[in-house]
Amino acid sequence: MASIFTKIINGEIPSHKILESDDYYSFLDISPLGMGHTLVIPKVEVDYIFDLDEKLLAGLHVFSKKVAIALKKAIPCKRIGTAVIGLEVPHTHLHLIPINEMDDMNFSRKKLSPTQEELAETAEKIRSFL
Image 1 (cartoon, one colour):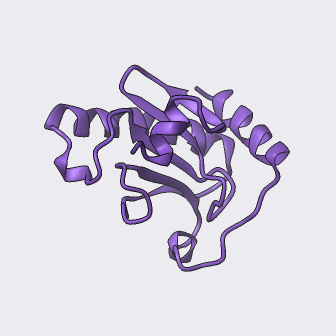
Image 2: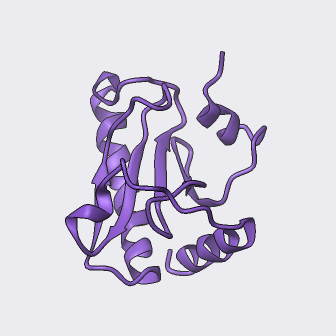
């Protein structure tokens, strides 16, 4: 059965896309830790990040860098934090999160509930810096 991320890639579930290539897809998290929280995924469905072949793993990070640079320009913050947890969806994904302090990356914190309009505006702002 396809993961929710594969369904997003295939357009079966809508997303607020940031950037897409032949091998990777990035989109806003709909329950973000902070506005701009973006997920970056390979299009191939592999559960554990370290099961990706070396070329795909390296490419994931190069692709993520492009997104992170635009994200930092769009959302005022000290850094873009990265995290790979990988327990919630069985499809490799990298979190890119605008942060100003360590607690901004605390996944046990209450998530935001932005509207679809807020997500669309945020995605457009990030894309404007690509």
